[in-house]
Amino acid sequence: MPQGRPSRIPDDGLTTRQRRNRPLLIVHTGPGKGKSTAAFGLALRGWNQGWRIGVFQFVKSARWRIGEQSVLERLGRLHAETGEGGPVEWHKMGSGWSWSRKQGEEQSHEQAAREGWAEVKRRLADQSHDLLILDEFTYPMTWGWVEVEEVVATVSQRPGFQHVVITGRNADPRLIAAADLVTEMTKVTHPMDAGQKGQKGIEW
Amino acid sequence: MPQGRPSRIPDDGLTTRQRRNRPLLIVHTGPGKGKSTAAFGLALRGWNQGWRIGVFQFVKSARWRIGEQSVLERLGRLHAETGEGGPVEWHKMGSGWSWSRKQGEEQSHEQAAREGWAEVKRRLADQSHDLLILDEFTYPMTWGWVEVEEVVATVSQRPGFQHVVITGRNADPRLIAAADLVTEMTKVTHPMDAGQKGQKGIEW
Image 1 (tube, chains in turn purple, red):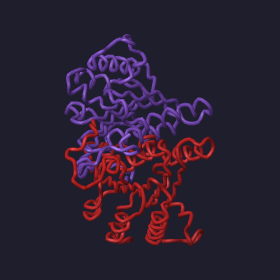
Image 2: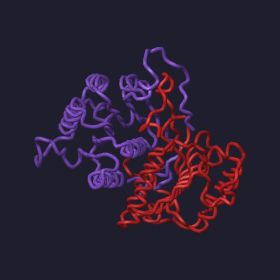
Image 3: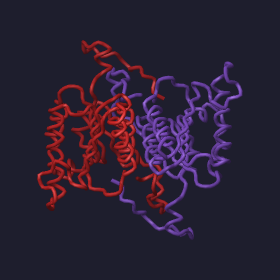
C-alpha cells in the first residue's frame, strides 16, 4: 500500500515538482514471476498518460507474452483512431528487429541483440519514446553480448524525460547501482514445481 | 526467462491438458513494488484470451492506479463495441461498492471490506468471472476484517475454472500455503528513499 510520502526530503536544490517529474531507470529482476508483467502493467499506466511506449524484447520467444503484445498494439491502434492514450511500438528480436540491416538473412542472437541495443541507443538520443521497456535485456548483458558499462553509461546519461524499464534475472550490480527503482521478484511457490505446465492467460 | 517445462511430472492421474488448464490461486506479496501492477498485467493477458475480468480493490485509495482502471475499463468498452477480448468490471471500495446496501450512507472501511468479500463470494459461487483480482486484499485479512480461514477455504473450494489473484503485503502463511503461485516482491531500491515523490505514469 504505497503512501506516496518520501521518507526524507533530499537536499538537492530541486523543487517538489522537479523531483516529482523525474525520469526513472527501473529494474525488475530476481527469479520470481512478474518481472515483465509488471513492466507491461506500467506501460498501461503510461499509455493512459499519453506516453509514447516502446517495447523491445531482447530474447527470442515466439509465444511468450503474445497477450500483452496484442493488447498494447491494439491500444496503439486505438490511439491512432481516436487520439486516446499514446502510440505503441513493439519490437521483437525473435521476429527480426524491423530496422535490422539483415532482414531475411540468418542472424545470430548475439548479433541481433547488439543491433537491438544500437537501435535503442539511437532512440534514446532522439527521445523517441517516453517509456522504453527493454524486456529481458539483462540476459544479453550477462552473456557479454552488450557491454554493461556502456549500457549503464548510456541509460544514465539519456537526455530529456524518458523512463526506462529493464527486466530479467541476475541484473548486474552496476545496473542495480545506477537504477532509481529496483524490485526483486522472489519465487515462493511456482506451479511448475508441482508439474504445472504453462497455460494461456497466465504465461502468455 | 520461463521455459514452460515442469521440473517434475506429478503422479496425479491428470492428463497434460488437464494439468495445463488448471485454475490458479496466485498471491503477489512482499514490500516491493509491482504486486498490483503485475496483477493488472495478467488482466491484460486474460482480456486478450476473452476472459471475463473482475477487479476488486479492497483499500480505499482515490488516486492510485487510476491508469490501469481507465485502460482496463476502456478495453471492456472495446469488448462491448467490437467483441474483441473480454468484459471488464472494476469495483472500488473507495467509491462505495456498486452493490453495497449502504449506498450514500457513511460506511466504515471494515464494513465495506466485509461487504466486498461477501460479494466476491457470491461471484465465485456464480462463476461470474474467469479472472478475479482481489487487490490489496491481504490488508483486511491482516486487520481481522475478514477471516483468513474462511477466505482460504472459499477460494480453495471455488467451483469451475476461475483464476484468483490476491495482492498486498504480509500475506498470511495459510494463504501462501494454499496458493499455487506466490511471488514475493522485494524492495531493493525505491526512489521514495531518496526523497522522490510518487509521479504520474509510475505510481498511478
